[in-house]
Amino acid sequence: MIVVLKHGVTEEKKTQLIHWLKNYGLQIHVSDGEFQTVLGLIGDTSRVDMDLVASLEIVDAVKRVSEPFKCCNRKFHPEDMIVEIGGVKVGGGHFVMIAGPCSVETEDQIVTVAKEVKAAGADMLRGGAFKPRTSPYDFAGLKAEGLELLRIARAETGLPIVTELMNIRDLDLFYDVDVIQVGARNMQNFDLLRELGKVNKPILLKRGLANTLKELLMSAEYIMASGNERVILCERGIRTFSDYTRNTLDLSAVPMLHELTHLPVIVDPSHATGIARIVPPMALAATASGADGLIIEVHNDPPHALCDGAQSLRPEVFADLARKVRTIRKVVTE
Image (cartoon, rainbow, N blue to C red; front, side, top):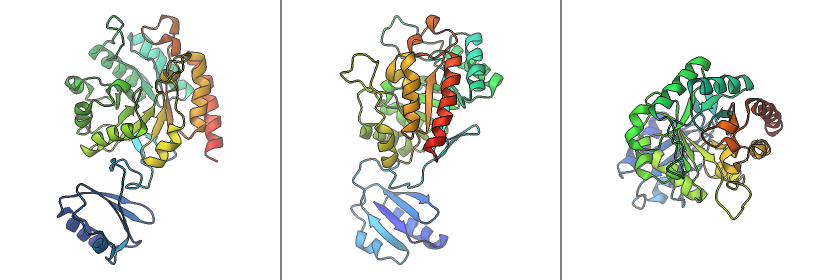
C-alpha cells in the first residue's frame, strides 16, 4: 500500500501518522520528494482501513500495490536512486563506466589495465578474484590474493573496485571492496542476498541467464528488505535460441526496469555477446537505451587472458568506445 501525503505537511503530523501505521506491525518506507512525500507500507496491510487513511486531512491519496516487490518499486520511491561509491555517482542522471579484466591474473596486469582504463575515462575498476566457471578445470581466480592485487590497483589509480562474491563464507575478505557483485549464477542465492542486505556496501546485482525482470527485482527485494537499499541492477544478457552470440542482450530491459524501479540499471555487453568486436556497438546501443552505466571487460593481452579473452577489449579499443559513449550521452541527455 502507498500513502501519498499532501504538499506542505508538517514533520510532526507525518511522524504521528507513521507511528500510527507502525502499530499495525508494518514497516514504513518514507520517500521525501520535492513536491510530495510517499509512505510505502510493507507487511500485512489487510488490517488497515484504506478509507479511514484516505480521509485524513494530510493524505492526498491511498493506493494498493499489486506487485510483489515493494522496497525496489518506483511507486514506493518515485525519485531515482543515486548510489555513491567513493565519490562516483550512479543513477539519477549520473552515468558510470566500469572496466577491467574478467580475472585478476598478476599485479602488473591489473595495475596496467587499471591505469589504461582510467586514462580512457573509466570511473571504476572491475576484476574477478573469485570466478564461477562452467568447467572445474578452468582458471577460477586468485581468490584472496586477487583481492589484494585489486587493492594495489586501487591505490595506484584511485579507482573504486568492483568484484564478485560467490559464497557467504568469503564475505569477511571483502571488508574494503567498494562494490560487491552478485553474478548471474547467484542471482537467486537467497541466503547470500539476505547476508548482503546486512552489509553497508553497494551491491551490483546481475540478471540470471534465464530469469525474468520480476525475478530480478524480487532478488533485489531480498537485499533491500534486509536493510541495504544501495542496489545497482545489471542486464548482462539472457540465454535464448540464438547460436551466434554467447547470450542475447535484452536492451528492452533497461527502459522497462526504469519504469518499474528507482534503482540504477547498468548493462554488461561483454558477457551478453561474448565477442569483442560486437561489444562496442552493443555498448553504444545500451547507452542510447538510457542505461545508467556500462561494465566492460578490458585486457591488455586478450589472446593470452586466463578467462574470457574472446570478449575482452584492448585498452585502445576501450578508449575509442569511451569517447563515443560520451558523445551518445550528450544526445540522450539533451
